[in-house]
Image (cartoon, rainbow, N blue to C red):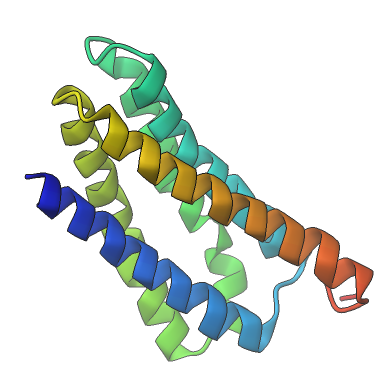
Length: 150
């Protein structure tokens, strides 16, 4: 079962990597997405942090965070409809589909006590979130190419 969850999270990560480094870097991000994407990452991460610090008997908080995370990632669709080509739209549809499945995988890991697996994935998410904040909201802005200049 661990290999299934790891594979699922890896697939999610590969799709995110392609979205970020192929599509986002090609078209650039405006202010809404450059701020919103780290928010998406933070909410996704919050599910992992919850699983690391809370007993699985307290499932309601996890469900609330997971549903919120799944809903909040769709907030950019009005921007995507205007700025994204078909390939990126399709990739987003895949990401929207796999997102709750990745969280179900987290739930399974959490209830089985696989804390190391959850912690490693949380670290990966933290690193990606830091990258998103620094790249899109500090580095690109400093270079005059970021959302502040758009």
